[in-house]
Image: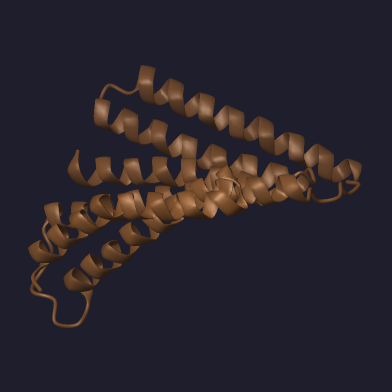
Amino acid sequence: MSFDDVVTTGLVALFGGALLWAAIGALVGRFQGFNVGIATGMILFGLTGLAFAAWLAWRLWGPGADGDPGRDQIGLVGVFGAFGGFGALGGGAVLASELEQRSPPAAKPVSRMRTGLSRAFVVAANLVLLGGMVWGLVVEDDVVRGAFITFHSVTIACAGWFVASILGGGAKIFQALIYLLVGGGFHLAAQSLRLFG
């Protein structure tokens, strides 16, 4: 199957299959609750996108690949990966949130040093985000480079907030997935700008 055939099949499976995943999610939700059903549909949608992204990547860089891939081909791998990643991570975040609400973890005492470090990471992450936005949107003359700097500041800030939540003793799985979803999404957007801008 050629690269273009895989892309066509992937689009049909991704968006046509969304109806099937929604139906399965509704069935699961009927017995396990609405949020679990939504999460199931999103995760199945995401796994479909990730599977076709992996297949396309294999066609481009695996054994027997024909020459160097073009920017459009690399972009298509990124598109399927983005849809897959957002679906899988978003569904995982919804599912983790629901499961943690059903059986909330016990709060653990945290030392003053860890609390102070947590606050320091929050402040540092906020400053990185603020500095990146000011530099990217106000100081930088090049619009593409400015957007690249702004997007990267969001990614770094998400990493800082996640470390702060771990140090502060309040880290939860759904929070980690949200930070990964937002930070990873902005990182992907930054790399897309670098590739196509």
